[in-house]
Length: 374
Image 1: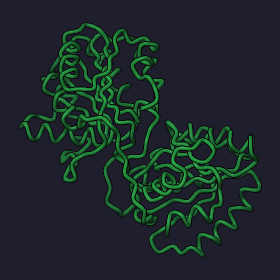
Image 2 (image 1 turned 180 degrees about the vertical axis):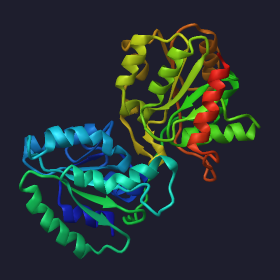
Image 3 (image 1 turned 180 degrees about the horizontal axis):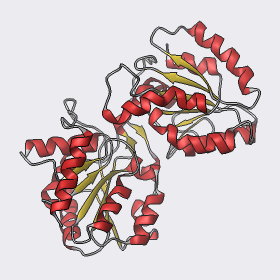
Image 4 (image 1 turned 90 degrees about the vertical axis):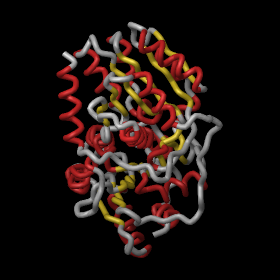
């Protein structure tokens, strides 16, 4: 069905969410219709953040909000669903629209498989009435379901639409871009040139895919890299755990702005612990590019200032390869926690592949390499 028709049937005046490729049609419709408008459409840092924002909207207006997200974000909404929205607590009605990655019997990436298996059950266990939208779902079916959902919402309960692959469409095009010139794959290529044999933890999405292909092109082993294919926002904490336990090895974290925003508290923990062997690199294109390119708020905040306030001894921004190379080399030699924010353009190769090794193989090879480092 058309994304705009779904929005019309739901009838809400406020949407908040974290972008998802499965919901790209809806995301593009919202951007074309509202852009980023605090009265009507807010892209939040994570799904729990969205849920709380939706609650605030309802408290202020008495109206029904919509929260959209990929099913990988269900974990982030469980707590506010159970302890905030629930009709056993504050009874705050909310409509959830959830992109169904890893749907059983539909090929997907390994990080989505288990999440896909439990997607519907999680909502049912949280007492959220659910309807699945497929390619052949009609507008009339959704209207009928929404009529029933309104009765449920009126009782202070939540409802959800779970959206299968290709179920939503939108005919208008949206182009996402910024004024930065450096390409992410080239940035990662410069990082690997300096990091050498040091271990790298890379964030979920295209950054890890590009790192994998760079190693392939260079005929290098993949043992140096832990590709965080799921658990968005947690790569820096993984890197921290490794750095603390391998104090004599330089550890590099290739992070993204959307991921860093999603669980920004990790920066406070890293800054408080100050591992001298960790280099935290945030590639900032101010976009959720892997799932379509919708904007993050990272273009409007001072990432290096935040890092310094969190206790990082050194934080700098690089907007050219000359500056980047200089800072990478200095970080490699510096016996202190460092953060490098790298300004990046939006875009990737159309033929960008995916890792050909399994997640388990990646983990085992990486752990074996770490063990051999002593």
